[in-house]
Image (cartoon, rainbow, N blue to C red):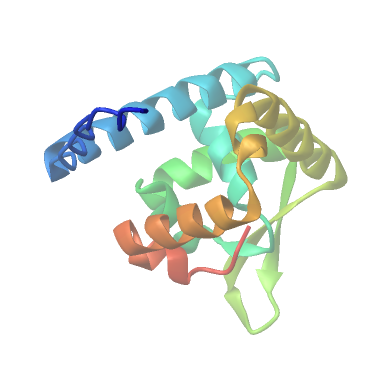
Length: 156
């Protein structure tokens, strides 16, 4: 006669992390990302802010918008654009809809630099490549819940 297997109680699920724990983990992830980003940008002779500006320029953008996205004063943006323009990574041109507004655009060299930075960052964020399609959708959805204004922007 065989005996039934003894009942082993299943482990109770771990309690969900508190919001403050999630916030701390998100802050650690962001800090790690920007440490890597700063190092990759520095490898190309760029500051963190110069690298961030280049990465934002998926399309021509007014300098005021760049200041808002970078959370800095418009005069800082002018200095950053001046330095990037001197390296021929960006150029300025008047907005055809309002000649008073200056648009900042990537040059071909600037576009190559952005592509190089992204490729190097992706090699350091190899965990993203391990996510299947469902996980990618879930991550995007969750980030959109946490940062709804960011999620509303067109994908980069």
